Amino acid sequence: MPAAIALNDVASSGSASAVKLTAGSTLTISGCVITGPSSTSGSVSAVYVSGAATLAVTGSTISGSYVPNAAGGAIYAGNGATVTISDSTLTGDQAKNGGAVY
Image 1 (cartoon, rainbow, N blue to C red):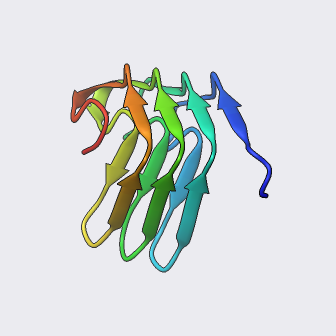
Image 2 (image 1 turned 60 degrees about the vertical axis):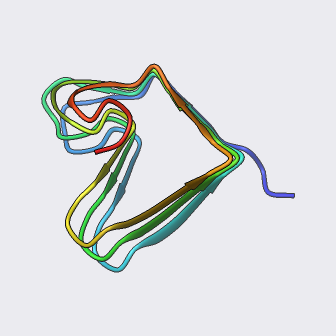
């Protein structure tokens, strides 16, 4: 069984405070907890997915993400990105556009 990773209260002023995937990247987040990431001037707080990147979120929780000036509180999926979310909870995420997912 893979180990669970908890990312709590991560803050950034860049494009992603917890995870950033760019073209050609693939990531599965499984059985993880990401709480309270925030980005005051960046484009997303928890997970940024762009280009031909692929993200799968399963059996995880992303909560309390806060991005007051941009889009995608929990997950921002840019052009060409593939995102699959299953058996997961996204709650209390806030952004100017797309509270949980944009």
